Image 1 (tube, one colour):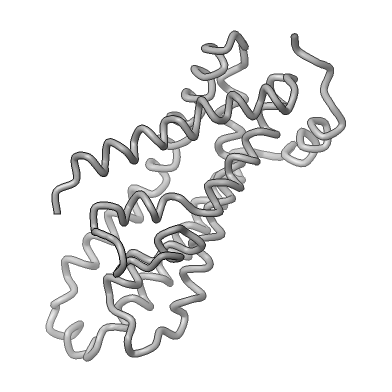
Image 2 (image 1 turned 180 degrees about the vertical axis):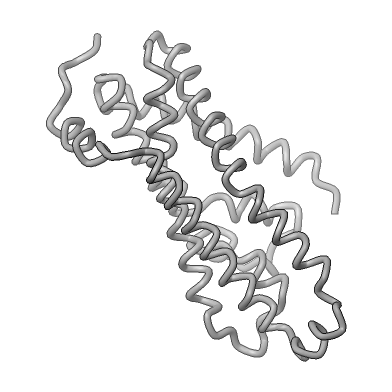
Length: 216
């Protein structure tokens, strides 16, 4: 049974009561800025960068990055759509009816969590040492299991999965527990169950499938 909006839910509702369109624009610009700076440092970490750049050896790299910048807002919109649908479906599976629009808007708000690993990656390689390689910078994932155990100590097929298991995914899940609690007015315990079913279970299924079909 739905409950009256709790004090935690009310505070969260008041906190995110702002123009979501402006927020989305700022979010996209922030992602683009961080990724542009990171890509710049990746290039500058490569030995003899200036001569290679003058010869045009990084043309493909630049084209790929331009495409990535253009795709960024669309990839975010797609992610919000998929995540909110998973929560809507997970809620439906346990017998809760929640408005999809509010789930989508909260997915937009919660994405701010993933600005943090992008920033950490940028600051870590702000002045990369001479031993840092292009691949090391490109595949760096802050506060992940992969970083903890070391990529060189595990088979390549597990790199993506171990990189995905990180502290920010936990923080994101906590955000969603309170977000779903606010939207549905269900208890935190029920909201935690929906988050497990809607977010973490699909991640487990996806990572398991990725490891099984991986071909190096």
